[in-house]
Structure formats: structure tokens, C-alpha cells
Image (cartoon, rainbow, N blue to C red):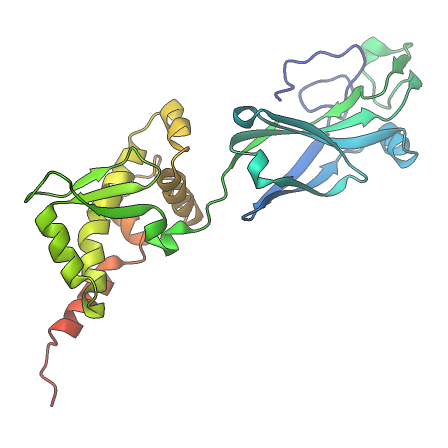
Length: 288
């Protein structure tokens, strides 16, 4: 819910209005997800004595309005205090979520005239019904996805399969699925399967396939416009790589760093592991 365009028949404390001054009503919000829930840690801030007094007597209540249009989720959470945690099932939210902090009336309030009311309202008293908005914070948003550091297990976002039609030829990378799909020719897939059980070759084989596929994925993310970016966030591999990069301090679409450098950060220096694997396979010095 974007409340910027709303108008009210009574003065409302809000940073985007001058009905009540100082208009210092803010919501401090932190989102902490796990596999089952989204936890919205909240803390309201304002200095209006009228609203503080009404809240202390239970005549108004703090509230958080959460809306997820993609999942048709819209709910007003009435809060017992200005600080706490709202818990929402992970199944309820997916994609873009908007959050607005509010103060609403708990019952009928007559003769309402808050401290700091604009001079245009001087001499007026307002009658409020249950649920009327008395304060509204700026809308905040977050992306509701519950993928956790999936690059720790690359198989969660990338799968390697045998081509059904190509006997010999280059590998192909498909970025249109929920996972990145790497297709090897029939001959290469057979060789891959033969070599895969050897632990000394594991990192070498992975890098031969994973690095070019991931590099292709990074370039795909880098080149997207905003509307395309939001749409692609539906894919597990896309949002997982984006999240890992942001957690590492890299905005893929904004950075000037070469994508090959970003990839090395995400995969934690894969070349080093490949070189160590080569040394194990072919030591630089013969053992005594």
C-alpha cells in the first residue's frame, strides 16, 4: 500500500504531510527470514504527546499494513506496543512486499485536536471512528524470497544434464529455467560421468562447467533493465546469485568491476582450488 496519494478528512502525522508538526513519524523496520517465516522487527519513532497519551490509554494503537500483490496478501497487524516483531508465514509472501507503519484509532474519539496541528485546522475538533488513520510512515518494501546462501551448494541453482540430440559439440547454457541448466553433448557427458568419482578431479571438473555457466548468468543480470530485473527475480538461480552478490557488497548491475572478477568473489577464488587440484594430480616435485 502506497499511502502517499491518500487524503484524510482530519490531520494526520506523517513525514509527507504538514498536517501535524514536527512531522517526525517513522517506522524502523528490519526483515529477517528463515525457511518458514518472515520476521518483521519494528520500532516506531515520533515525538507527538497527544498520540503518546492516546496510545498509553489504549484509545489508539500502532499498526503495520503489509501488502503482497503477487500473492493477493493484504493484512493490517494491530500491535500491542510500538516495538516488537510481526511474524508472517513464508508461504504468504512472494516477490515485492510493501509495508506501512500506522497509528489507528481503537474506538470513537471525539474532539480530536493533536499537538502541533497546522494553523489551517485551528479552532476545529474532529470526530474519529474505529480504524481511522492518525499517523502514517513512509512506505517501505522488500523482496520476499527464502533462498539461503545457495551458492554454498551450487547444485541448488545449477544442474548438469546430457543432451538428447548433440553427439559431440560445445556445452549449452539455458537461463530460462528456475535453475541454470547446462547441457553437455552425449560424449562429453559420458566423459564427465567417468571422471566425476575421482575426488582429485572434482574441483577441476566443476570449474570447467560451473565457471562459464555462472559467467553467462552474471552477464545476463548485468544487462537487464529494472522491469526485466523484477520479472527475472522469480527464478531461483537469479535471486540467489543476486542475493549472494549483494551480501558480498557487490551490486551486479551497478558495479564497474569485470564480471569475471565478481564471479571469483562469489565462488571464493575457484582458480586457487583448481590449481591445488592440479598439484595433487601432477605434483611439482616427485615424492622421495
